[in-house]
Each structure stands twice: as C-alpha cells, then as structure tokens.
Length: 379
Image 1 (cartoon, rainbow, N blue to C red):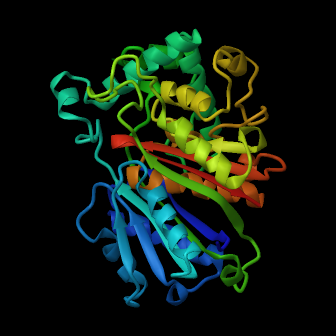
Image 2: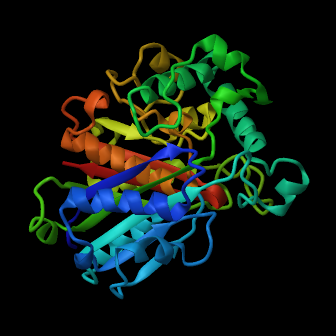
C-alpha cells in the first residue's frame, strides 16, 4: 500500500466573521495550503470538503474560485468528524492508486448557541437528554465518579487549554482564565459551567496530501500519515447503549476502539506520541477520552493532572493549540484544524507552541451519532 504524506496545510482563524461567508473562509485556508505545499491547483486531482451547516455542493462553491478543472469534488457531512472523514476518504483513494494528489478542506459557519439536530435518538430527545450540554454533563458525572474527581479537575482542563490558546493566533479565545472564573462562570448543566464548554463558531482548515513520490517533486517539508482510523458506534458504546443491549453487557467506548485501531496500524502506542490534539467539546470529555485513548491509566487521572502530565512540558502534551475550549468548534473544520497543528508541530513550525523534538502526534475527533476518527502523523 502506498505511503501517504501531508505536503502542506492552511487555516483560517476560528472565531466569528460576520463580513465573510463560508466560501471566503474556505478559499483562504485552501490558498494557504496550496502555497505551503508549493503545489498549483491544476495539479490537484480530487478534493474532499467537510461541512455540516452550509448549502448543497458547498465544496464546489468554495473551490470554483481556483478554476473549474473538472476534478471530482466530494462533499462530506459527518458531524464533527466531517473534515477527518474527508481526509480518511482521500487517503484511501491515494493508497488504492486512484489519485496521487488530493485537497482536503473543512469549513464551517456554525450558528451561535446549542447545535440542533445532533444525531440523537428520538427517545433521547423525548427525555431531555438529546441536547449537547445535558449529554455531556451526564457523561462527565460518570467520569468524575469513575475516577474520583471533582469540579476542580474539570476547571484545570479549561485553565490549561485557555493558557495554551494564548499562544495560538488562530484561536477564538486568546485569554487565560483562573479557577475562580471557570467555576463561577454561569452553570449550563451541572457540573459543566460555561467556561468548561467549547463554543460553536466559524473557520476553515485544509491540507494537500499525496503519495510520497508525487509530493517530493514539489516540497521536502512533508509529514507522513502513519494511520487514520474511522469507526462508528456499536449498540454498546458510551453511556447511551441501545435498548436492545442485554443487561450485564460490558459497555465499550468508541475512543478506545478507534485509537486501538490507529495504534495497531501505525505500529506505535500512546507512550510513543509527542503530543495529541483531542476533541475537548467540554472539560469532562477530554478527561474521559484521554483515559480511553490510553494516555492516562484509569484511576490515575487526579495524579496526572496534578503533576502536569498533559501540560506543554509534560509527559504527553494535550491540546497545545488551546483545543476547542480556546479555538471554538467550527464543526466541519475542527478536525482539520488538528491536522494543521500536528503538521506544524512535526515540522518544527509551531512557534511559541512548539513541543521540542516532536516526532509523532495524534488527533482525536468524536462526533454526533458516534462517528470517531483517530489520526497519527509522524515525521
């Protein structure tokens, strides 16, 4: 199977841009990625565009600006994993020999407030558990009970990610916060306060990928996609198993399954990662998924947070970009934002956020309806 590498990346800042529509955001990120890769648009053979909220043929709307070259443009909607699923599909098409060079773009203009129609089952909607803050809060309660945590541990995640976000010019929020500010911010759904939740927003991120041989004709600054796993939930996944699951069934977590598949494909484990970007839609989700991805052992969470294991200078830096808590989450673009950060880190181009000697990095995305991706990059 052919080796696939990332030739170049681009990003439009995440935030709110009332004077721009999604076409403007996507075009800026795409142009930056093409320039970074030193690859002209006319050499791109296929494009995958991840988006949740925009109109039909959104990829065509964005990319016609560069010229209607007649290439296939595939529009992908898979909730928060839309961008990374586009990357998964593009990688597979290159590995299988169908194409040599592809563009992957994630772009979004999400409305303010809670995102509606998030893929919950009807029974969840009828019982009031089909809203993101309520769903996240119940998962967080379970995580706190399982690992012996309290609200101070949730606040720590927000404090750390906002501190990291200060160094990221592409983040929506570039301001530190204190434990008092986090804990005393408005309660959204106990135990989650406002500053423990990410904000849906706007942005775009892109990558040009291809075979190592094809990319080497244009640039030597590429990183390898060591693995990209994509799975969806089973009836026994998460704290909301289907009613058809027999009592006593051992429940599983999709993050465990998808990360295990990626580790196996890449031939490395969590201890081999230099850093990881995670789907911190809320503080509790990051804690839960760090354990499920094998970054922290069960029962060791409080110790790991107290010792700074996940800080930029710690054993396994998590969300050095500031994560979604600082960047916000433009649904179709958030996972591609992780790819941009990881690529910069592995090339040594992350500036003040740089993790010294970064050799391998991972990105984790978890979306509505149980879509999950786990990508591992290496230099």
